[in-house]
Amino acid sequence: MHVLGMSILLSMSSSSFAELIMDASGGTGQAALNWSSEDAKQLLNGDGSALTEEPTPQGSTKITTSVRSSNGVVSHSAPKTVQILNNSSFGDQPSVNARAALVMDGQTGEVLYSKNSNTAFPIASITKLMTAVVISDGRLNMSEKITLQQADFSCSGCKSSSSTLRAGDSMNRAEALLFALMKSENPAAAALARTYPGGRAAFVSAMNAKAKSLGMNSAHFMESTGLHPRNVASARDLGILVNAASQYSLIRQFSTTPNYDFNLGYRVLKSNNTNALVRNGGWNINISKTGYINEAGRCVVMHTTLNNRPAVVVLLGADSSQARTNDATRLMSWASQLPKRI
Image 1 (cartoon, rainbow, N blue to C red):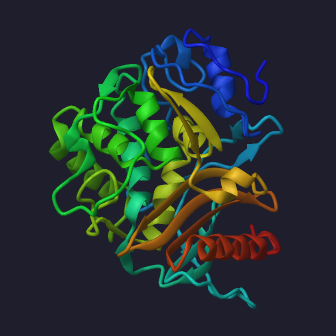
Image 2: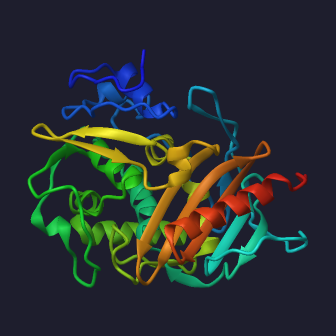
């Protein structure tokens, strides 16, 4: 039904919208501005809340093996709970430009590669992955309309940033989440926190409570976008977050959408995923989020499948976008050659 470059009408059906979002082939279409909960059946529960699995015990990571089929849909086996293990016995490890890095077996929790992985650093827009988890846990109405306010474009203590969005732009909550995860739009992430029950303060409290419940002991969040340099976490703790986020269908699909045309009524924003490895489609990536502010450098986290083994890749503080991509490519190529251990 979905073909490359086709336009999707505002009254699109649930199956056509889900097909668009779950298509990993690079096709694009216009988002449904008046998208209803009925239109989201493939990605949301019937009550309009995001699909998720049961919560994970503190200090553990729930892992789900995932396989992306030829049409881009991710299927998952039964989850298991494991403790994160450390192992430094793998020889000939690649060097990376990033100041911190982690590669973790997504099934056993074994750390395959580690560089400064227990030190907390600024994480920039990797923050938005926790924002997405809190929104999903909140079981909010994803079809509720959100209108951006001028306050969504700045916050106390935050770095300045550019955006293609404008105050007065309206979208539903699902579209705001897609903007935040795929295109890393800061006003969208700020509006998600502002419209959370209890407002921004309650949202930030929920972010930190979730981090604590997952055992992310070094993590601390000041706001929902990542523009505040005191949003910090270690690579190890971000590995925990990535595995937790991989349990949410909506986050998997939205964070790995290669490109999308957002129809805001009076203009269309043609948007691409911020991760070149997602856009290029050469790797089997199930979760993705990039980040950048001066204090954090270039960052990326991914949940991927390497040599039929689920794996988590975390890079913090690379010097440039190209260095970040090169680091990730080297680590994934190296990990793809490792023997699988039981």
